[in-house]
Length: 491
Image (cartoon, rainbow, N blue to C red; front, side):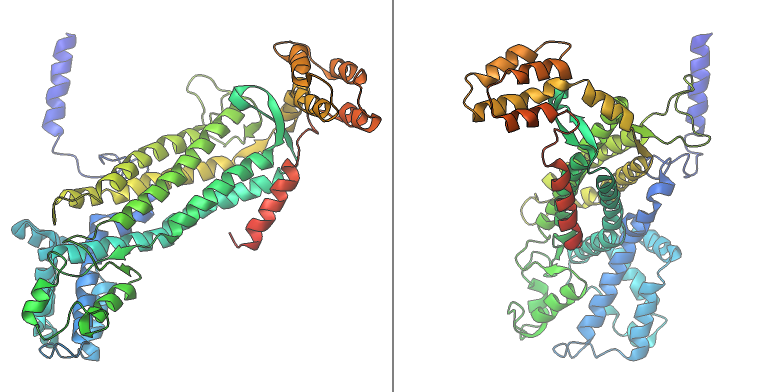
């Protein structure tokens, strides 16, 4: 009976496996399924449509740039009408346009050549541009188009979406640190009671790391090449030998650099057929480091919620457990940790693989590059989950105070250090004997120990007045000073 049921289910699934249309419920990746509304903003850049649109943009801008160069007499300057036509082609590029390119690719089995043929089709309706058709893709290898398309994709997605999303996390942390700079908290080195700190100081530690990584991510140069099949301008020289292509200060090579920099991408002069991707690797490593810092934070916040230092605001209608009604699980921090881990696995592979290519070219980078959107999609998902989780937090002052008041043994550090200053022998060993592994260390037992110390009265008074809640060093002042510097620097 059971075997029969399984056979029927299997047959049913097999009969339907080709019937499912793509939707959030049938998507293979959760980025396009369960989490589609959270990361859909990236589709305009990282999707196949986005890549094709950027390719069209590069091809069109390259043609217009060539036409403006006096060194190529066979391609006269374009009229205002022709340039307007090209602008509309780029600005109004539609899903139908991309679908037409994919249909052409079905026949050519080559994605970039399909873009060239598409443009020739479109130009046929414009007499002036129709005469320029053979200058589409002039001197280019596919990688000249692709590397710049990916560079623009990353530049725009980084500036418009990724940096703002990461900055929101940082700003939320800054607000949390500011609000809690003076709230004492028991530190827990090795998971054990340790010298107290403040909540705000521990958050500031994360901010300092994350802001440094975010600056790196924001400022890494995206570079591009436009020098032909193996990086030597072979075709360019064959067509126009009179032009000194390699000379930085002469004719069109200057235009090449200007063309690339006009796009907001730096020029890479020495390449094989492909741009070496070292800048892309650096960008992936910077994102990976950001994610690693936030994974660390997610785990710490999970732990602080677990021991009651933070509470989470309940959301009306939300269920924490299918069987335990009381639970408010730290799901946002768990979601952040899990998705940032997936992102880092992809980013690590991208950073390690992309700079490696056999001889002058192989295609292993081509298929890997298509996963940039997936890597940054999981990053964005993790950042947004963490931001959401931070927004639900409420500080639990009573639990923080209770933990501090139950850990008077942490003052052993202060006492033995004062004893060292005043020449009392074996101070560490005496405090170790008093406190290590002993339960019941409290205010009274420590005061009794301090009372018999042969130290100056003012030193004894400072120790007598000390409590775990006041033994926070310069945590609060250091936090406020750090936040002031951050504000003044504009971060």
